[in-house]
Length: 475
Image 1 (cartoon, rainbow, N blue to C red):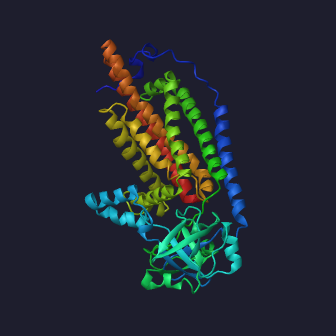
Image 2: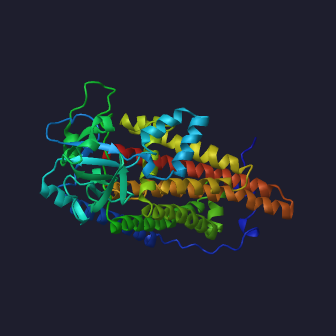
Image 3: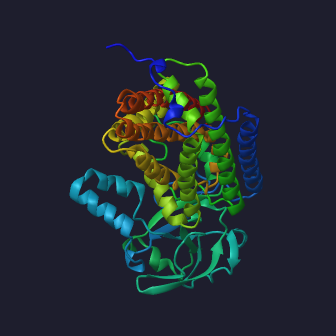
């Protein structure tokens, strides 16, 4: 079958509004991209400076097991009983679905801790350490049923074995292990609540634990995970609200700049009459409003999901745990293993296969041949699902986005171009109905849609190589 040339199709302007001459200057978009990146760097630097002199910034704690080093403080831990909480519709529904349809997912839910409650930690710490932990309120009286609450701990009071414990103060958000926990002095007056018979476990706390963890020598067992079975509590602390909003703002500026550069690239390439891609590129040039509108809509859902996460920190933490669990133990474990191998090419290939073949081609483009514009719905849901756990709410995420923002611009921008491409078929179908000319209608729509799919594949290949390189070399 002879390949069709773009020159065989009539000019697009006979079935679309007269295209405005697009701005060819990319300088403003480069400026926005760099300004956004600078803002993210500034937030990451500010965060590092805030944590640099904080003695608790590198704290690490485990609720069970012996410490891997000698310099650690013992603690006793209990998880709050479920009767202190109303049922969680999300986790309850997820567990019910897993038990009914896929029992393997039950283990994943448990491993991710999606239905875990806060821990209550009893520790032997000097008074000055307790005073340094306090953000507001007062310290608990030793021996009394009183506790300090972590910054996202949900209750003002709870019961343990029939006794009511009251929250007297809050813990600073910079202290990661207590983010989703309660703490009180390990005094003889409360020791009966932290015995093995009461369900308590013995763990440890080390203020310099993160640094010591990085210095551990690899296990002699090649399959051993250095963090496995340590019961580690939250390893990252909440970052400041200004930093969170600053990083989101920087990402939004980069998204705006990246969209402008993507449009400028398409317009520039359209002038080259590239075989097969030319029809799609001409469509982009002729429909700037549709191109920009889809990008603005998709990015609005993505950043809206991030902003929602800032006011629902517990749910966001669970969503992030779930996302990490999917990569570590779930359906995307092969991607985690490829990155763990530290082979850039292997990691790039599995990333490209997942992002293009699975998520774009089979889950978006091909279904759009049957359900017009299906990829738009799919991409919208994906952006909401990904944006929520990826909100930069935890220390270290601002630094990660100094390089991972490039991945975001390339990958998300490619998905949005795929949304544009699949709309070309229904647009030209309308022309076929109106004129009865198949070649200039459905034929052109299919041809342009196929060219757009190839263009998206090229963008996702570049994005995969960039992501594999940065994550392996920098993370």
